[in-house]
Length: 365
Image 1: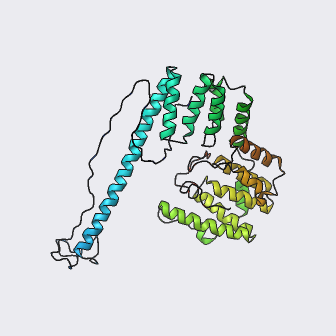
Image 2: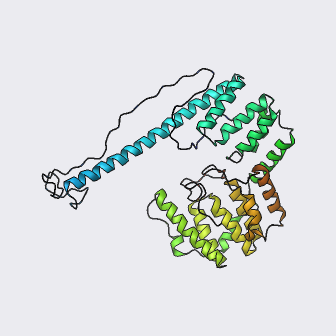
Image 3: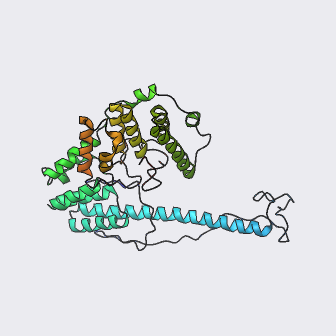
């Protein structure tokens, strides 16, 4: 059983929260809105330029607009600030509601009130879908009740959403009823293959030998970028890298991808494209290592891999076959995990454009 809160909660506007528990109740609270922006333009005539009390031009508009224009702009700014406040309030409310619901479900599990635990966890999954730990806890309850079929089916659901902690599974007595099932053992073994602690090579050795960074890629941003700027930066550099790869200028393409990997670590598509590039260059170990990391970060589309001629140079390699077959066991449909639910060895501290911002994200194919 996993007893910690989910850190990534989908941003949804939820209506009519329902808490299913052994004994619980809740209340809703309302917080009045308060405008933050204020128009400081006491000009008397509509056509006059905005000036402050000291006669100087209004710093908000630099004197370029009339009083009415200033007031209109200020009203829009206030609406935006209120909307941002509302988003923050909704997210906080969801986090609190989620925690309340998961605590109630865990209480039922501890009391061995398994029917209500199942009901509670299903309700959480309905309101906050695709949470791996929620589904894992359902696996535990089904196992404890002897429902092996639903336990294994739910484990198949938890894995594509990001569940990968096979070490925890090995110690979890809740799973003892399904541990000897053939399908469980296949899933457990495949998790160990994909989510082993180390990759097939040390990619830094190759990176050190291919330092051909372009000036734009090597130059660090002077100020932190907004998510929109990061997405634009990512998109631009990814397109440039793919153009170099298409032109068979692999060194330049890899150099840009390496730079992106440093800027936006643990990105699924960056590592997948590095795998393709290294394969095309004939560097099999580096290719398999990059693909391995892409899988750890959420890559699941083994069907795409089967048709990707960029990988032909490594297709016959034993390590590649092992990774590819494990991927099919864990994700029979080959469906990519939801944005931001990957199991990267080290989580990026900033948004990872192409994986989190867009569901499908920009990529090679």
